[in-house]
Image (cartoon, rainbow, N blue to C red):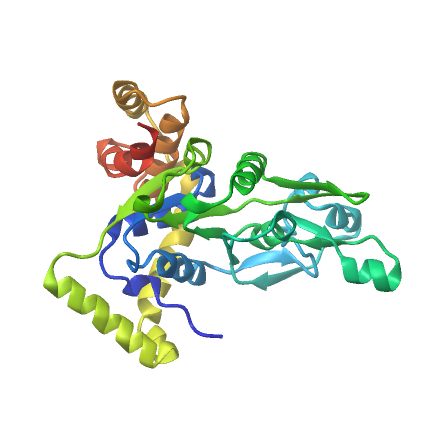
Length: 317
C-alpha cells in the first residue's frame, strides 16, 4: 500500500489544515467543507491527517469498528450480545472512506448479502460505506454534485450518529459516527442548504499566487512521487510531533473553560451577522476550544474566536 503524502509536508493552506486538526481533536465540531480550486491538496490533506492520527481500538471482527471501551448501548447489535463476556479489542488505523458520486444507496447504507442468501438461504446484512467510516473520516469529493437522495440520507445519519436499514425483511441498526469532509469547486454548483448547515467548518483553498510557494509545492510532490516511502520517512519526526500534539489536545479538551466574555462575544458576533439558528455559536465554542487545546491554552479568549470565526460562520450567512 502506498504511503500517504505526509500531512506536515503540505505547503500553505493553513486554514484548511487548522480546520482538519480541530475536527480531529473534537469530532463534535461537525466536519469540514473545503471549497476551492482543483489540485490544491484537499484529498491529500484528509488522507495525510488520517494516517497521522493515533490508531484506534475496535472490537475484533466487528464490521462496524465498535469501540470495546464504549457503553454497551452505543454498540452494534452483535457487540451488545457479546458484551456480557467481554469484548476483545484490536488496534487499527483510523479509517478514511471515499463516497463516490455514483454510489447507490445500497452501497452507502448496506444491503442484503445476496451471495449468502443464494448459497446458504440465510438473510444476512452486508455493511456499506457508512459502516466502514464509523469512527473515522467519510470523504466526499465534488460534494456539491451529490444526488439529493444521498444528501437526505447523510443528513439523517450525521444528525443521529446511527445508520438504520430496514429492507428485504432485515432490520439493522449500527453506529455511524464519522468526521464528514466534503470538497468541491463552487463554480460547478452550490451545495444544498440542508447539508451545508451540517458542516461545522467551511474553508476556502486557492492556488498559490506567489512563485516560491508554487515551486516548493511542485518540488515536494515530485520528491514524493519518485519515492513515496522514503519521502514520507523524512517527515516522520514532524508527523510524530503533530500526533503528540493532537493526543495532548484531546486529553486537555474537557478542562478548557469558556467564560462569560467569550460566550457573549460569540453570541454577539452571530447576532450581528444574522446567522440562522444557534449552530454558529456552538461551532464557534467547539472549534475555539479545540484550537485552544492544540495551543496548550486553558481559557478561551478573543484570539481563538478571531481564528475560528471565518471558517465557522462564512457558510451560515
